Image 1 (cartoon, rainbow, N blue to C red):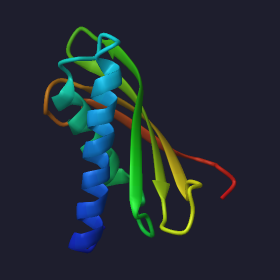
Image 2: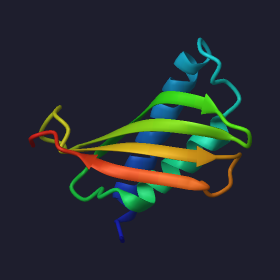
Image 3: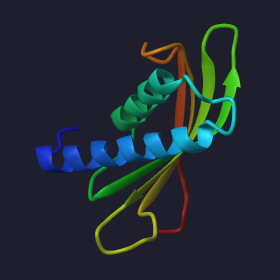
Image 4: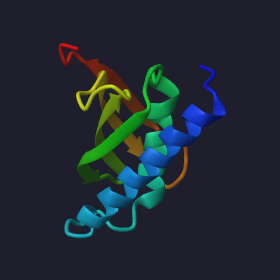
Length: 115
């Protein structure tokens, strides 16, 4: 999918803020030190999710399990437009990744939020 630079910049900025916010709460858990894994999975979400009409994207890491090689991350993604604080689309993602590599397992599904 092709997006304008302005939309991509806004989306990436929002994603970075969410990752950084997630890192702050993750420090309370045992999630510190997996920044590259989170970034890799978020990039995979961006490749598969429909970001059209979205002006803000929120990625929430809701689960982390250490695997033999890497981590299994569970991510909830919400997309918002300028007109509302209610998500226009939501996705549930499972991602197995090691470092900044492409995820070895990846699944994403759109959640029916009634919008």
